[in-house]
Image (cartoon, rainbow, N blue to C red; front, side, top):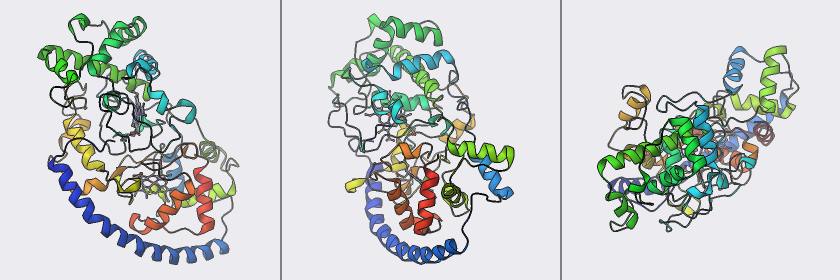
Length: 436
Ligand code: HEC
Ligand code: HEC
């Protein structure tokens, strides 16, 4: 999210690699354009010859894919690393905190300023403005994603830099550019506010931190070394630091419980699948959207990556958007994994509730400690639920229109295993994306 920060060997390795690859990628793209125009011509003929009507005979394989895409679950499943992930009391605190600007360094920004509920949990901007906190040099160079279905994901952020939703929430609270909260300031604010403290105690039991013995602000790792925030944190005993971290983890887990409930309302697509299942036919979608659906779920269609009820397989891919708009490098999964391995608030860390042998934790433990430089090209497949309402698109918000996203895929089609589409088919695909 930030381009500032450590100048480690990791980033140097990545820099060399990304610079090396950019030239290569441009070559690839040119080849693909030629290949796509050939495909486009042939598929236009195909469409003209055999228009697909809304009354499609769905094969068993297609029906199986439809059943994997819809319906959405009523709630995201529990996360074993957060034993409160389905607690109503924890969700109530989390929901309250999402809307509390007092948690931010300026006292004026809350989660819902960027993840706006009325805007499908996005802000409608290319990139949000940073909050001018302790790290006022920070910039935010990524687009605000929707939070619909975020609890269905395995990894969080565009680069998978968190493996738990509670850790992701804490990352955002503490990010200098996003909220700028300090770890001590956060527990002080929650513990000293009557309402927040009551909600906390309803969810997690008695409040145990002795707030009078703790500084009012302070956080670990603040730079430079003489930063007063860091000095305040370093003045704590080891036990105090552990206790503050434990309370912070619980606050994160309250956000998790609230975020896990954000499931998009059923769409026309869900009605279509349900009616098809019950009665064998449905008029919930236009003929164009049904044709688009057919293209989407084809073996060489978008469902290769945008699968499951959130239309995301949660995995990481190179879709040839390696640098951010304007050419700024983005370290992708390379940086994401580094953050994951450094973070206190990860599933396998001391504040996670699942055993170290739980698959969620062994999977992270098995990540190679020597980075694979190719990860710098990889980003997580985002959800496509409510996609027509969450412009602008891509992780840097470079595209205002879904048409532009589809055009981009036509250039990269071959490399991604996608079929090139005629103009008519692109319109059909767009009609389908609009009913999600
Ligand atoms: C300044 C705008 C802003 C604010 C305020 C903000 N976010 Fe975010 N949020 C973003 C951006 C930008 C990203 C993408 C960051 C990235 O992937 O690097 C994001 C991503 C996320 C994600 C990951 C979503 C996914 O699909 O993996 C979660 C979870 C999240 N935010 C929760 C929160 C919570 C909880 C708060 C409040 C404590 C919050 N955010 C406050 C802008 C904001
Ligand atoms: C190889 C996996 C893969 C395939 C195939 C794929 N996508 Fe994606 N999609 C991604 C990834 C990864 C991103 C995020 C890329 C980024 O911004 O860095 C993405 C981003 C998007 C976005 C932007 C979402 C947002 O919130 O900004 C849209 C829309 C989209 N894809 C639609 C499609 C369509 C339509 C197709 C088929 C033509 C398709 N995708 C095929 C992996 C894939």
